[in-house]
Length: 576
Ligand code: ATP
Image (cartoon, rainbow, N blue to C red):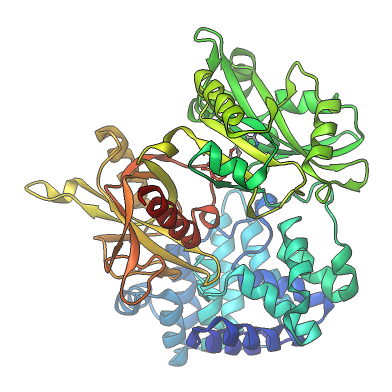
């Protein structure tokens, strides 16, 4: 049994390291010590979660309640805890310090193992209904009463959602491989397994149970896959040079849904892999009619605007469903689902089959009226592709996605198997998705009431860090700015997000929660930002402005540092 005090000691060591290889080794030694029953729970704790996103288990403990629990477990008053927190800026450090000079010790303390701590956190997360906050506090006090100062540091950081070990998923996958085989040789099958079920705890359990079986890991219903992503190109010519003869699909600006069915059971998952089944009763009913007992497929859902004879854009589709109630909206704004891929069929994992074969199944199984195959045409030349692109724009769509005929479904990866060509690419304007990490107040007389803009960051998955890329002050209307500021005020934090590397400081830091789409003119190098920082300069957006909130994207799904660098290179080749 792995003692949680040992886990905490390793976390402390990891925090002191910065090199990925070093971190992998330290983590691997820890993972090696976990047994089959513990490994899944340990991996979730390292990820700072209790379950994969589609299970909807969220700790949901605010700092205020954690402070109450700390006061109760340490014997200090709430005011004393708060004042120490003000100085340290980190509630984990505060609890560690106060526990070091604890005024009261629990009557009986017992050593905690990983399973105990995980189960206790799960109990905290699951407390619901009236009086649940008191329950959560009580459960947290129980765990803290059994903790030494270092354990308390990590438990508190975990419950308030800021564990920030700086260990990204790639490092965990490497460490799992090293723990079992002594080297990184099993990283690839482990990564594939993770990409096709999005549940690192489950993968780790399987792997510890039967390490050799990880290579045969396959897709299964109700374990959503990480979505395949598209690369981008600027011109039809660049696409056909890469792919040769290829399929050109219409790019619908709808709501991406991954649909799972087995017998009578149906579940729908968003792009962020959250369960969306209850939002789409109309589509669920149609899915039950699909002539397949077991199937996983993907499509874009959107509503048709009969008056304008074109589809509503995504934002409007979702807005209408929320505003008018799901049942009513289903009737008034009926959705179509354009199916563009099949990932599993009658017990068979389809992800390794070439696109052409998967597309054949899409056309065989989906013939409308509601579930339809996405619009597709085979093209052989840049000229033909260009014609398809123009047709798509004429229909009010945002572009096309070209697909490599022989490529498998690349779960969780951005590959040239899919290449998008969007309306704006030919011009100077492009967009990225970034997470808001802080905001500024306005300048001038009423400065403190006004919104001066936001600081936004992209994600570097290799380093498991957020890196700033732009300060944005324009784009939203005054009303939008006002309501956005109100939302940001609710998630203000005293310190910068633990995952963030920064060179500039906004007036207020916020939890990295809201994802925004940002348009810009081009990318430059600047010492202000930490995106891809090298020799004192990072990449930064020039003339950035807000386009919209991306509620469909999770923090880890935002644009990556590598993509920003690619866009920079693409831009240089464009101007060359
Ligand atoms: P990305 O998904 O590449 O991170 P993004 O969310 O901004 O970026 P886009 O640039 O719009 O998305 O392009 C990819 C998205 O296009 C897919 O995630 C999917 O939701 C959508 N899409 C629309 N039509 C199709 C299609 N025919 N095939 C695949 N994806 C499609």
